[in-house]
Length: 259
Length: 259
Image (cartoon, rainbow over all chains, first blue to last red; front, side):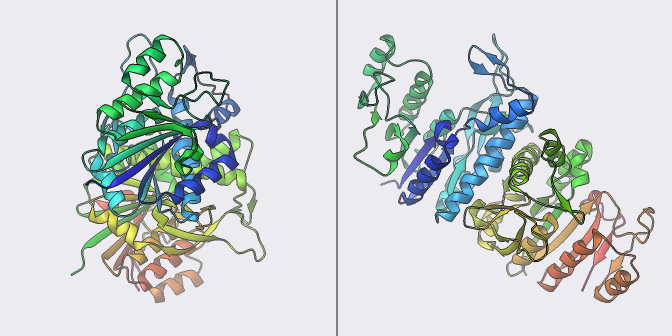
């Protein structure tokens, strides 16, 4: 039997809330066995960009990462957030080790190909180096990934944290049984985005198609679920979407995604 | 015989000069065998602080690290500089892995005790975890340290990069033969700070005392040399102070420090 590794991705809204983040990091530290954290960005990068009058350009609601904004996300994600999260986890007696995709060449990506829109220094993942991550896990370290990758040609790239979680999860399935958690402020995938009681308990390939066609699942939830099915198709055992509390409270409502 | 590890510390003036930094990183990548890089800060943190109108308070020429400036150095040192250096080294086929003292609890420090002056979040090193660094070296990774540490209670701390280099070097002497390079823009310790030809080729404990008393060695060079003698007293084999080119050019003038 393969050893189990839990991979937890936390989103920006938890990171924006100091108390919620601290509570989550206490919970994360109590997870028994092997674990990996992937964290998103939060509003700090936007705040810093605004202060520096470098507001990122948006096209169709998507951020364009120009040189100045790549510097900002590198500072905030890989520096401020990643190191503060690691320091808190160390305090919680979790032997956390922060990294970007450049470190140990853990995640190689390429600058997104320009078709209609040039997203700037946005990176699409090519390859996760499972050996680097396995080395850390075997030494009882808990890798903490920020959403910065590189192209192995010296260029850092801004990469979606949900995608990083899915790619890291998929890369480890040869050696581990992988359970992936996507945690955010909601209780799961909701039928009605304003009703926390409308959690859809199970989603599979067939019901996802239906929910998408009926526009019950839409906008930001669509790429998240695409990442889920990608991970499942690549051998991830189970995916749970829910509130950050779900990692320690089994009875907390959540959505389970299966093939 | 213990295996050899080369530890190279580069200072701010190399980091401030994009071309000099690139040339150095090409040279560093060609060092055969085990190697560790420790980098200082450079002017980027000061520039960012100025842009944000958070100019750091100075007392007796020393920077006071308040909360806002700790955020800035964490962003710039651990984020922007560390990850760009790692990405460039990866491009140069050096399997670099960036870290702060918080990562893997590599360097535990404490907030400098207030005697007359409160330096704020300045960290004095308590303990280097050699096991974390050895694990990386054994896996052919080249650790790249920024000058941020933590207190294991969740607090990040701003720590002198020269000190980090000396402490990391000293911590590895049980397991490795350690050679330590302090690289900067000058050719070594100079008798006359304005004359690059006045390099003092060798300094030992006795001559250091003399040079200090005669005020030939003064100001910033004093703590650097204190770090050197600390490292030598703790088993480091050899210390070289010189221009960054010295790591690949044996015939480049430099200062050798011995006990």
